[in-house]
Structure formats: structure tokens, C-alpha cells
Image (cartoon, rainbow, N blue to C red; front, side, top):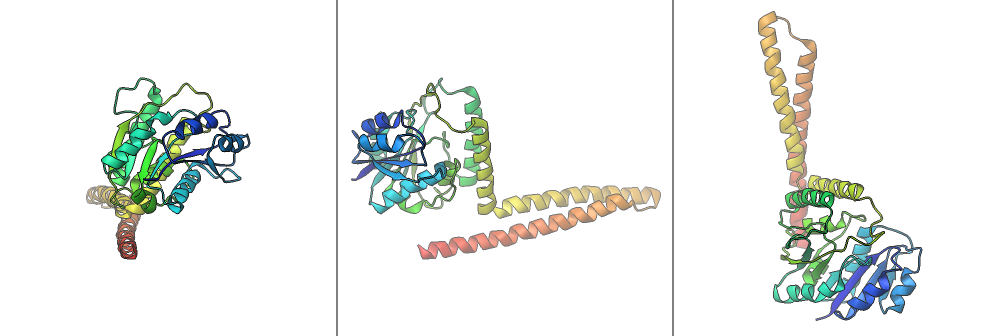
Length: 297
């Protein structure tokens, strides 16, 4: 079984050497995907014995993850473990990931910070993670205690089946929304993550979480247009009906048809009908694409 530790990173010259040296003890190959670093990340990673793929310019976390998958796919790796290069993820967990993939017949192994009691995670992060877990479950129809964990392992089936389109931080959630479509088995193992390291994130946690949430909503719109547009349509038709009842009562009492509410009622019915039929049409198109994709595979 050929194993790979893949490390996407940007400006991690201070920590990447140590991470690579520790990871090399547990896998056949260590890959560092340098996402346009301006420091000595590439030189340090190569000196530590890693294979380096460099983007040249900063393309985003998702683009770095995509390069990890492309390398693993192109080199016939059986298991790929992805971890951060800033020192937050302890490489000593790598054997646990590989073992879970081998004995648990798992295609995706998620390192969860919530399977065991963990008091090191800031409370505001926990709240944000729970919200993103809920939306990931809604969009991907899968259960996980830590959808935002970047410490994961993937089997050959997952490596070949997953397609990453998101170039930013939403890539992790995007991957999980494909688990059901690709019939992948998911297991979780407990991990700890360090939060006492300075400069471990280039993004504010709030903006990061909001960005991931918007990405999940866009995926939901794409995968379930009937729920989105149909829901909006039914809501508009419901409000239009309420306004219509008020218009009828007002006309019965005064004998005068209120112009403003009547126009509002008509507008709501038009929008509601249009949105509902749009949802039905897009749902039919999405189903057709899924069937064509299944035939192609």
C-alpha cells in the first residue's frame, strides 16, 4: 500500500521543515503544495525531503487541495493523508488515519476535535463549527462531528472520485457534500489541534466561516434547486394568499378594491408561480445531468 502525506501551505517556512520530517516517519512520500509562498517554504520543505509542487502565485486553499488530489491520482497512491503545515496538526496521528482507512474500509477518515472532550478550542469557534456542521449535513446528507477539520485521509476510491471546484476555504465542505454522490464510507478518529501557535491562519475566523457558509449555500442551490426555488415560490404564494384574503375582506366591507394591496397580491402570485416552476425545471435538469454522469462513469 503506497501512502502519502500531503501538506498544503503558504508562507510556513518556520514550521514546514519540522512537519515534513515528522510525517516522513509514517508514509512512503511527503508532498508539500506551496501556494505562492513569499518566504523560504519551498527551500525548507525540499531540504527536509519533501516533494514540492509550487503554484507560483497564491491560488487559495482549495486550489492547493486540488493539487494534492491530482498528485495522488497521478502517482497511484492508495491512501493520502492531508494535514496543515503550520504545526497545528500533529503528524503522529498519521498511522491512526492509515489504519482506519485499511481496517475500517473507510474512504474518508476525518480527524475530529469533538469525539473526545477538548477544552483548547475557543468557544466562538465551536459555535461557528456547529453551524457549518449543520449546513454540511443539510447539503451533503451526511453526519460528521467536525466538517471543518483539515486533517483527513482519503482512499484511492475517494482520490479518484472527488472533484474539487472551490479554490478557497470552502473546499473541505465541498468534498463532504460529494460523499453520498460517490458512495464513499466515512469514519472519524479523535485528534487534538494546537491553538497556541501564532499566525496559523491568514483569514479572520468570522470571515472564513461566513465564506464557507456562502459556498455551502451555493452548492445547495446547485444540488437541490427544487428545495430552494420551490421553497421561495411556496412562501411567495402563501404571502400572496394572505394578502388576497385581506383584499377580499376589504372589498366586502367598503365595496372598493384597494389598488396597492391588489397589485402586491398579483406580483406575489407571479413571483411565486415563476419560482416554483423554475425549481421544478432546474430539478429536472439536475436529475438528467446526474443520470448522464452515472452512465459516463
